[in-house]
Length: 375
Image (cartoon, rainbow, N blue to C red):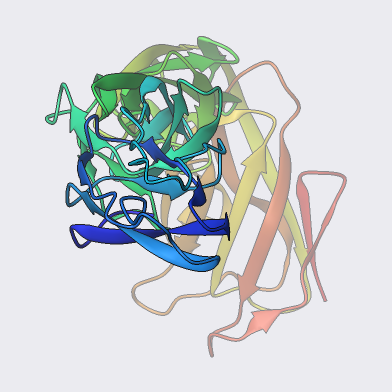
């Protein structure tokens, strides 16, 4: 126990008149804790048998343990004056060991530390030492631990600190390492590649992007795609590049503030000449729209459409014809329009729309790739 007052008593057993057996005081903690030992009882010439008390004075704050360690004959009758014990040997602290619940902390986390003292008699006990951190900027130490006789270490910043517990002139230490939280990796760069860098008009390629991060890792990403010349090649949000006309376009992928690009060259193709679009219709035709595949359409004109005064235009391989004056192409058959084409494929019609004078779509179909049949 820890002395909170200065005076205590130990019991003296008197077996017979004039003979006393004294239980000596053993100390743990402060040296010279006993400041006086009053042997008034044993100075009695004829103490009566029984249990008596012997008052002692102890320094306040001493950690003490009372036990019967030695039996001493303090004297007897015959008029002789008994003598008191000449000394009491206190127990001293020989070492202090400090342990921590963990020796590795992240900033903001805590650990519990505890100290145990070993005494000169070989015994040990948990103690409450004086705590100190040699680097409070890394981690602080307080005595307000989660349970009695413990301290709390709080991590403040990255680094290493030594926590020291001092008790009875002896010290023990434990090293605590504090690490900072891992920062979120940022995009350091983007790399763009294309499945083909050279295209023919009407063909397509795919572009992909890979991001490299600040922690050295990389991953495929979906950037924002743009084309420097959409009249030559377009880029969709999914990364599909479509060749439109001869020339060069730069396709750029941008992701999280980082960009990379690849050049796409669209080769010019020699004209094949002309292709006639035929029709066989049982109903007057007021307008038409169709898409041509297999070749590139560079122009259109002639045929029944021109004879009826239709305005014919082309773009992106789509051919559109109608009359601003409301004219129609009479029912019958013949050449609807003549297409100027380029490329090495076979021309075919698709996405066909034929309308009457009221603007209603007629049930038209394509036969043999280039012949339009209308009921």
